[in-house]
Image 1: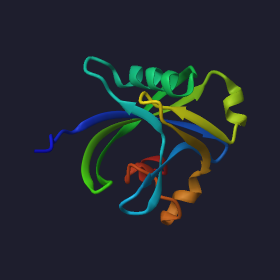
Image 2 (image 1 turned 90 degrees about the horizontal axis):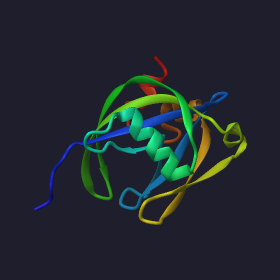
Image 3 (image 1 turned 45 degrees about the vertical axis):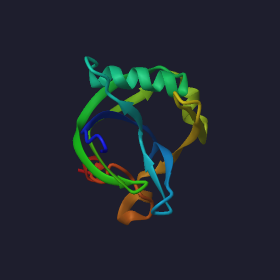
Image 4 (image 1 turned 60 degrees about the vertical axis):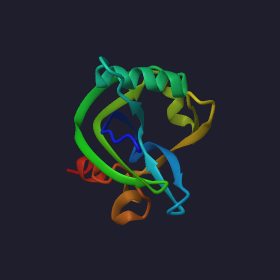
Length: 144
């Protein structure tokens, strides 16, 4: 039997002009790409803001500052044929190393050794579903 849990995560919006930094993902069942701001799972006893400091350090070897809490969204989704459920703490933040804003692609290093890429995408590209931003309700939070 599959263990059913609600996963708490934190994500951080890094902004450059009219663009946000998003990691690209691919769902092989749906055969579609999706984009999500960088972040990860909140560990037991860890504040969501501390999660972001840790995750960004682990994934990009970068330090961040000026975290500002934007809100919480609930995300119920299907990925790779499985239903997932997340409570997502959303923050704005800034890289301390400003040279990261000049890189068109950043390589994300995961704990399991896999890598994937993050890129700057104009927020308008997610309007009307041109590109798929997740969590689903994130676009509405960012544009209110």
